[in-house]
Image (cartoon, rainbow, N blue to C red):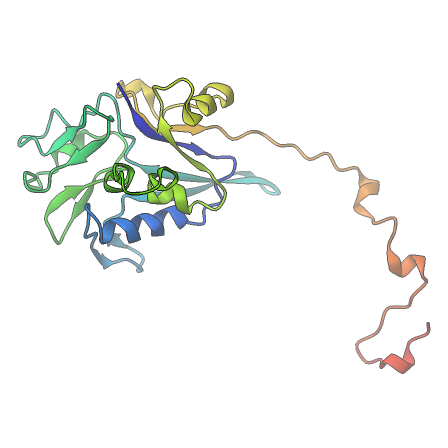
Length: 240
């Protein structure tokens, strides 16, 4: 069985939020939209987002690191949101493994959000229904698009190629190779949901700089014995 999913490389994600804005743009006007925003900019923002980027800083000064961690629906192989839905609005497609919501059946009871251990469900205050990432199902299944464009909007928009898309059940796919060769891992596997989305762990990079490397040995001012220009000097005052 095919399981379409994302693989996110935490080494190269720069937290630019291109994935967030492209997702919002595509889905607001697409099959999954609209995605309302009532108060998106204040201290306590509210709105509907299928993708969010959380930023963490750890370590002690001056040895600190920043991690940008994108989060969205993980399209679990055993999604806990599906069996708790009283109307069958939450469902998993058998052909590609994508977890979706039928808005016509959703009554906004929020059972799915309580069951999801990842906080991936969003309640749309305007339509009064639950919403979530669809992996841009309307785009990836559109046979009229070139194959290179049949990818989620967030994948196409990422400037650093931090997001990969494909079938994690296909051992030869780009995502499977990345998971296998770079130690990809699912989020919170102890819940037994078997997430389709995976993350590639950050690699620890240590810079070894010797003290003598902090001074430029070929400083052009020293080499040519040029006297720096003071703020009050004119070009005629400088000794060449």
